[in-house]
Image (cartoon, rainbow, N blue to C red; front, side, top):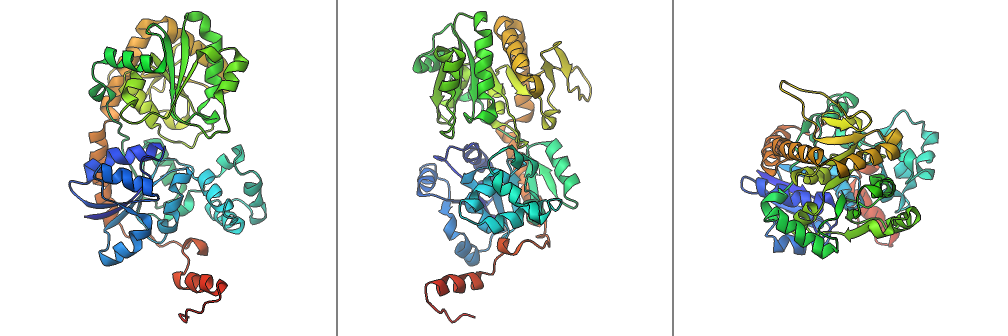
Length: 450
């Protein structure tokens, strides 16, 4: 089968970029794939990795020369996916949704280009319950929490041949919200750090030496975006509240931030600037050792776009005990709650239920996070049992071969599905001839095509 694969790639600092690097080796042996990216740097990376990448600008003429059986879009709520939108509705395909919320990225894409009218039209189309005269609220509130009320998914879901997500609860919600939508679940696979880092104790020692962290420190890792939504400020305050439990308690931040949020300022105000280590972006080759440098990890999130966290999957693959925010779409994960240390989310098809993480209620985040960290710091048997259960959960649900198997199944189903018939806002499926003559007319050129 001939596939067009739209995705960001490294050096774009996006989890989806590394994700496609992991997925494509499972697809390339059985399918002819052209990978379409937005930048020259991504093309250089692809050539170095022997990936068949092309500029997205080449997609139309390549498809006319030899039609594709299916277009696969790796779509998320970030600006690095903007280049896909001009193709998404003109060439319906399999949309892999990495976030069940696209409002922030789509609004930024349109409003930064002064396309206010198109944004308001899309908001009303995606959310018919929003009166047209109220659509301006989205413009005024852009970037704030109000945007989470409107995921802006309808146009994408209804126009796709099939949609895939990494969470069964989210899949059920999409089927319920959009009648007739074909939604599949693909298990999210991540690389195994224990298979690539070498001896665990040696990798741990190397990473700590590189980061300037003492061998006997207790390290709490927060891996992923360094943003307020990842509850970094709450983590810093929890470190401040529990520092008396260990003589060298440290918070290690691995990832990048938007530049508008400075965790160092928060740490100084909390009196724990000396307990904070910021590693910044870590390449895929260095990541396993960085994970193994930690004793526990945080995978907190609020507000949520109902994403499936690859960062959390990588932490449990490393056998780390983790702390999660208790979110509705994570109700399939058995966890401990830190108030009475009882099990929550007891979905079991037989056999004992083993907690694989600690989950905290966002409405009492500060107190419960400090309580969870305090127990993890002082209770080595609990750390060991959670880490072992986490590693087992990874092996059952989050390996790359499992993801490859699911992709091959879903690709076949999507290729067999006809493009749905849906009436979209006109600007999402513009008439190319009219657009060309309009642009030429602004330059005083008559193409003589109409």
